[in-house]
Image 1 (cartoon, one colour):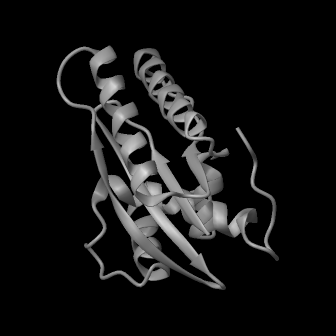
Image 2 (tube, rainbow, N blue to C red):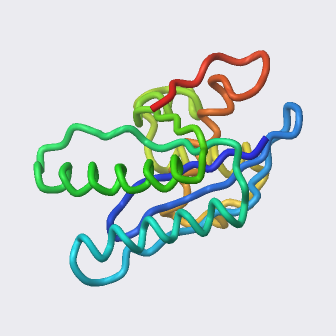
Length: 165
């Protein structure tokens, strides 16, 4: 089963495709989708087109996205929400189920504590996916962690249940 994890950003959106093979999980691909320059509307089109291309290339069974977070900056939250909406739209237009998890749920599932640092997440993602440390692009680390969270929480028999968006 292939799962596409997405870490939304209007400037750079990270993505990670993982594949479960029994109890083993491997990274199929990971990288970033640049939002490009220009207005927010132009960046949203770039993100939509980029995710659509990733979906077409890797044919995942599901898309998993980080849930909106509460932040102090209202403008940042508004832009992030619009970006998430465009990403969910791209996945649903492709006929894929969309699941979402909070940053705390992802950290708890992948690292074992909801207060894990970025460094701890990166190390654990590299370890679980048998990738050399430093090989995972910084902006793709969280997307791989989100995909791993989904597999740990319900996408494979014998695990918990993933929540649908």
